[in-house]
Image (cartoon, helix red, strand yellow):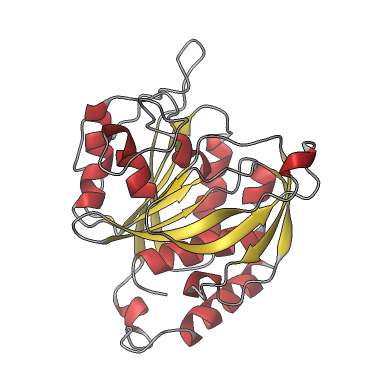
Length: 273
């Protein structure tokens, strides 16, 4: 099954290249995509997610996958994981892209954020998954942040500020009408039970997928549509950033359609889609 999906993904990426893109075979000539996955923190089974992401990406592209993580031990504050990237602005050296899959909801240190953002401000592409959007929050983060404010720095990187979500429920996914290449060939589907993150403020993003929870336990939320996948150009280098709020649960992440989405996001971020 994975081989057929990977083949379809390869075919799709080979046929949507726009004018001026790399010629056929350029991605292979450039070698495997060197991916660093940052993970750890609260609320998720990160050992399982690391396995799902690494195997899913390797089955869909030529990739070398490395991990840096901290899985909190009993007694540690899981919402402030002691990630090894803190204090190390060179943590992404030698990698083509960093996937942020950490959940550092209470990490409000400006110094930690400086290190996390450093490689991306320098031009290293990024992919942000789920709780990464709820990390590195400070100040009055439950209110829309203002561009340029200290507590806006992380959201200016991810592209959308999210402050929370309602009860878990299946999410109906559709492609945005932007015609983004990451969504090329996407067919609407409904996820397993998942969290639909709200959109509090946006920073010049291009929506890729939209989500709605028609079966939500909260009746008022059933017709709320939010952007759940998007792209963004960040910082002085106009660094490519792909983000999706999907996949709180491993059942959603294990879905081949989700892994296709992340793989296409990675390939777009590194300029090989």
